[in-house]
Length: 169
Image (cartoon, rainbow, N blue to C red):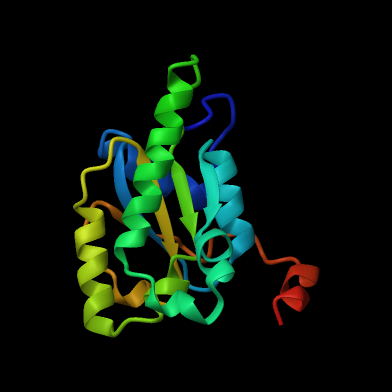
């Protein structure tokens, strides 16, 4: 769901186009050249989607035990988000979709083959809402020739603010 009153910034146009071509629902990978949480938040805001920091909400509370979380937990979070949005729909609230940030924290606990298999399953998963999973660290492991995989053109993205770069170090 895109805010029809707000123009889409050029770097987000491929994501908006992919959503539109695929009927607005389903699972999508959005590939970034570098880790840019500021852009991920901006994407969620511009596309009028809920922003969920998977690492912060579901992994950090587990501490060292987070590495034992199965990848299926990602699907559970998506299903829970869909149900919460469906419950709100009953109250005349529009389903928006989800940007699931920092999934890579869990993917990092798996080997390359398992990550690649998860990504392939994810983009083919039937989801009744749009779900965007941004990737930076493992972006090159995602299938490139899939209409549900979009690479962000780095020449179009705004420069990262100096304070954000310093905070990330």
